[in-house]
Structures are given as structure tokens and as C-alpha cells.
Length: 629
Image 1 (cartoon, rainbow, N blue to C red):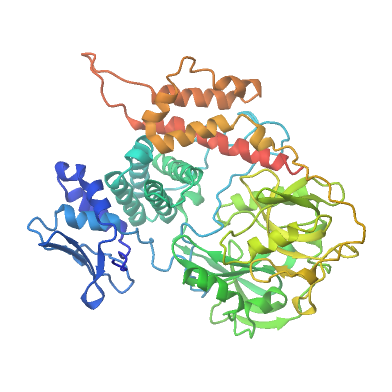
Image 2 (cartoon, rainbow, N blue to C red):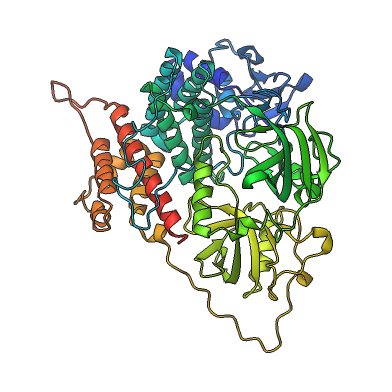
């Protein structure tokens, strides 16, 4: 059996190959792609070969980056080559290469304005969120930002090429949405890849990355056993269409344009204190660690070491040396220590650069019970969550919400999470695993914590923007002055990084003799799950899975207005209107002057889908924030 794998292929190479096929061959392409599974073998000089029958051989010769970036690096021995089905099928079966080979590998130079790459699509923690209103009631179009108007964006100066690239992305994205997963085969994906390449040439790296995420999501969803969540693909379509609409309309904020490389600015002298380490594991085979730091004024900073290597790299990087200004520290020491940095360079999202002019000196760290770190845990939790979600929604953030600190009392384990109550009259919160990979320590640590109801903890984690009152802990520490709290080793300096340190039995207080049995774990209300917005979510995901036709079929029931009744009853009138408009547009069947059915344009359908998706995202964010009250 073959053990070789196909090398990544640049988007434009696959798009050109598909375009060169005849209409007859395009109809056979998806079946030919499926036939390529398990046929790759190692050839001479680092090439990869796929054989079709006895006389046809496709050879891929990756370049120095390990990817096929030119058409001449893929050749076929058949007479129709290069416009043949065999060559195109092999290219279609190969993974899609990143926009830049160093998309995740940070240069860490930090000098000037463009010396380190931006995070790659698929990196763990890349959770796009929108700002949400401060409301404790179910939002409607009058209270939630993004209430269905996809034109509510700030005007920015765009070049004609960028506007045209946005229009191409919108058209390709609209057609892919109308096709859905079931019909979103290689031909549909190739149109998206061509539009992504056009966006790259026009200087729109953020739009290109959004298109590549959709293509990867379509591929994963079409392959059995890949574990692709439909909600993730729905979010990817929403991001792609929202950005493409703003670009095609000639109006867009700077976030729609983005930057191909992370911009660093001089930060002068800076004293930062270590908070914790977090393993990083990307969907594209990269692994490493991010160490979170606290700077002046309570600003969060990070130092990252992310390179190819997957889970093995993520596990080993926790004790790797820190490449920052000659500091003699590893990430474990930095997470519990500090640095005094001269000539610091800082990106907009708080990442510290390691340029030649940067000098760093190790200094004593601060316990979580000492200022200024203790201030993180003294802030009212709702206020902290609102700030964290808003910071995560900013384009510069790019990695999801900021960290949140709070003191909690553990009530017990329930299903796949722990239930705790924030001390001093705070809300019930759910503690979920930050990184579920079985080789990381998160799951085992959270399971051990769950076996000690009544334990009080100081928790530092990231609020989940997609779940009600949910925190994903990265590190824990004892609560000062509490008896039923953790007892950590002195060398840990008062906290445990849940991704690397492993909690043991002697780290927990011993149960008192004759202690009563733990009380039942309260479930607590879940405003997000209880709200009828799930009907809108299901409609949107139905469209992603089955395309426009599936939405139309769902709307052809006996009473097509019935799904909107619970929405209106709950005060979500705008959500009901948008859902009804989406269903009606999906079922629109235009006819020509002779009464014959003609193919409906996907433009209006995509607008209706996007309006409903944007409103749903804003409504859910408002409910998530309300759950922290």
C-alpha cells in the first residue's frame, strides 16, 4: 500500500487546470479525483507519482517550498496532456497550499512594518466574532449590530483592481453557496481558487484567506470521516461573502483589505510579566506555543514559536528557548517570569517582535496574587467578558477574545464540561477544554479538577464567543486565603499551565472526614440554546449542506410561515423576516417569456443568506454576553 502523500498545490495551478478542461471532462472530474485516493507513490528525485492504468502516469515535482506552484511541475504521460483529466484530477486531490509558505511560521523579526507573517487560516484560536450590544434581552434589528444590512460598513479607498477582485469573489462565493456541499465539487472549488488568486494579486490577503478556508471546508465536508463541523463552514461562508460584498460595492474598512504580513511598530522600553503558556496546533500541520504576557496598563502581549511539526512540535515547544532579544529563557520560564525589553517592537495584536535592535533582560515575575496581575481577577466578570469579546472582534486581533481572569467555585462535572460559579455572586459558568487533542494535558487536567467539587480556583482562560457563559481555561492557580484550593509545587510559582503541567492528587486539598456527598450539579439556563434562533441556524446550515435547492425544499411545506412563528413570539421579528425572505428567494423560479424555467441568479439568494447570517451572528453574540450577567 502506498504511504506517499500528495504535495500541496497552489490555488492558481489547480484553477488553470480545471479551466483548460472541456465541458465533457469537467463532468467526470469529481469521480476521477476520488480514484486518486491511495495511489500516490514516491518517485525519483523527490517527485510523487500517480498511475492511471498501465500507460498513464502523472508526476508532481514540488518546488523548494514543498508545494506545486507552477503548471510545469505537474505533468502527465497521456496524449491529451496538459489538458487532460488525469493531471487535473491529481491536482484536485492534492491539498491546497497556503497563500505563503511562511503563513504560520513567524519570522519574529519585528523590525519596521512588515517582517513577520500573519496567522494562517485554520490556526487554533482563530475565532471571528462581532461586537455585541450591551443587552440582556433577545436582540432584534433595532438592538443588534449587523441586523441584516450588509451595507453598513465604513468607506475606504479601494483600487479598481480590488473592487473587481471583490466582485469575482462575490460571484464565485455566491455560486458555491448555491451549490452547497453536495454539489460543491472540484469545478466549483476551482472557481473559488481562481477568485482567491485574483484577490491575492490585487493585494487582498484577508479575502484570499477567507476563500481558501471555504474551499478547505468544502473538501473536508465532502470527504467522509474528516470531522468537519457544518457550523465552521457556515461561518467561513459568512466571512467570505461579507468581505466580498464590501469590496465589490467599493466600500470597505481596512479590515476587509488586511495585510499580507504582520506590521510591527516600535514600542520603546517595555516590562512584561508572564501569565501562562498555551499550546498551538493548526489544521495545516503546524505546532508550537504561545506565551501570554501582561504589559503596562493591563495590555496583553504574546511571544510565539509556531513552526511545522504538528502535535509533536506543540508538546516540545513548551520548553523551547525564547528567541527574543538574546534573553536566556525558555517558554516555561517566561510564563512564570518576566522581561525588560529595550527597543521593543509590537504588532497591532500585541505580538512582540525579535528584531536585531531588540534587547531583553530577564526580570522577576509576579504571582497572580500580586499587582498588576491581581487586577485581572478583580475586574467584574461581565465587564471583562464584554471587553474580551470586543477585543477579539477587532481586525487586528485575529485570534479570538482576549484572556479573562476570575475566581470560581467548582460545583461538579456535567457531560463534557465542568460547572462552576464565579465567586462573590457571579454567574454560573461552564469550563470546557481549551485544546481537546488527547496528547495535550488539557483534557486530563480538567477531568481531575472535576473530581473535586467545592474546590475554589483562580482561572485564566478565553471566553467562548459561541457558547453561553463558557470559559476555556488555559491556566489555574490557588485563590489567596482559601483553604479548599490548589496546593501547587513551589517551582510552579503558584500556577499551573493546563496544556503542559499535569495536576496530581497531592495538588488538591484532602476531603474533610465525614464530608457530605456533593450536591447535584445545577444546569442553569442557557439563553442561547433556549432561544428559537436555532431555527435560523438550521436553515442557514441546510443551505450550506444542500445548497439553494435544499432551502427551497425545506420551505415548500404545508405552512412555510410556521418556522417564523416562534421567532416572532420571542420578539425576534427581524430574524423571522430575514428567514422568510431567504426561503422565498431560494424557492424563486423565474421563467422566460415562453413560460419555461430558467436558472435563477445566485446573487439575490446569496444576499438574502448573508443578511440572515450576519443578523444571527450579532443576535447570538448579544445572548452570549447576557449569559455572563
